Image (cartoon, rainbow, N blue to C red; front, side):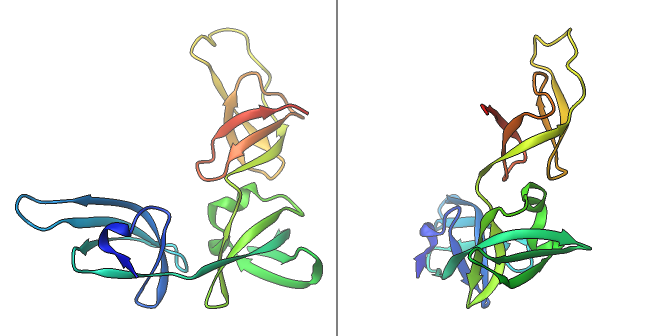
Amino acid sequence: MLEYNEITERKYIVMDGQPFEVVSSHVFRKQQRKPVNQTKLRNLITGKVTEYSFHQSEKAERADIATIDVKYLYNNKGEWWFCEPNDPSKRMKFTEEAVGQQGKYLKENMVVNAMTFNDDIIGLKLPIKVELKVTEAPPNVKGNTAQGGNKQVTLETGAVVNVPMFISPGETIRVNTETGEYVERVNN
């Protein structure tokens, strides 16, 4: 069990029998009252974000979230197919809602973590940074780059990312999967 002030960001808790990830938390005291932990919780099954205030006397059960490795195969008509890394015959599919925004950074044969709760797979956890190849990029334009101009490029997975002007097609870049932002160019 977690005390009200131990419920902090990136922890998993159980409320009403469902797993939640703590997105943000802020412990504060209003005037002479007792401290309160104001949190934003994301339901790991439905994806909905709700706000909840934990008072000093409240506790929350820690969610037992385990991870297993799965290999991404392909997606077709809103279905995302994965398999066990060593046994391609053991396949599983996810809906587009379950994969979420992170799906645009998945490339074939990439191994990612699947989160499980009570032996049910509830979602995916990609690495924070992935390396992807640039397939389409507008030409570099000389001129006003004193402020560090940006342009949009298309990656091998179809994702569109803002990058600096010096990035060209065929180069490999590192992208943050949580924010969708360009991190750096990878030396090949």
